[in-house]
Length: 346
Ligand SMILES: O=C(O)CCC(=O)C(=O)O
Ligand SMILES: [Fe+2]
Image (cartoon, rainbow, N blue to C red; front, side):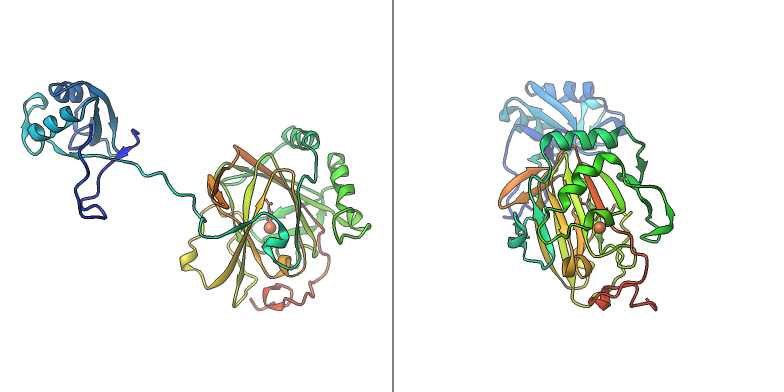
């Protein structure tokens, strides 16, 4: 595509699109039997044509860019709405084109915290540079040398216990084995995490590795209470992301499936409080307490994020390591309305 598009019939200020060297030409293109060479021959009669590009995917609308605005003006005056001899009498509909507006980064209205204290959700902590760049490379190499399982939009690996996306739970009777040795350093470092007891590393027995291609996120969800214990650690590698947290006023533990890839239309959703945090690569997020049990977490499906007015491009991928402890009995948390164990009838 050319970076130019169809002008609105009535621009916001009611004025026609300004004269320029670029024309939007309808009823013209390969779908109606007109080749680029035909277009160049017809429009070239008015001045040198710099480029001919499809205006959209229809095949019946093109953008013709001249070097000189005067040539575009002459072509528009001569060819618009009249049979064109050079195109076997075809009637073209021509207007000045307008540049495609760059898409504003979405989520821009939501301020993005750079620290967990700025985020202000009880139980959510974030430590930057939790692993070194060298450790990050080793962890990525380790998972890249192991088989990935492809989901609709991202790839995953599971260790300890398989995570079942259909039920958003684990099969606690199917132990896949100890967590792999390549995560031992990370597990040791977790004991130095603020507020985490030394015994925690021995308790972590499930690891989900997610690989998100650029622009792919994760639907809003609360990790099923009955599936995992309170503390959930998520290490971000290779690229950054924004994680949004949502607290619904009339909370329900049911949420869209984690496997779903589509963006969420929040205008359709019940009222919620939204907060967001920037997760740089090598950072470790801890979700515990209220943040783990009562807030949905969500990774918006964007290629670019607006962090404090600065546009951050997502990397070609983000790989996260989510460490959890499989729960062997029911959950008895105090956030009952979000708890599947305490809402059996849901
Ligand atoms: O990628 C992440 O950091 C979060 C993954 C997650 O929320 C999950 O697997 O439940
Ligand atoms: Fe999650």
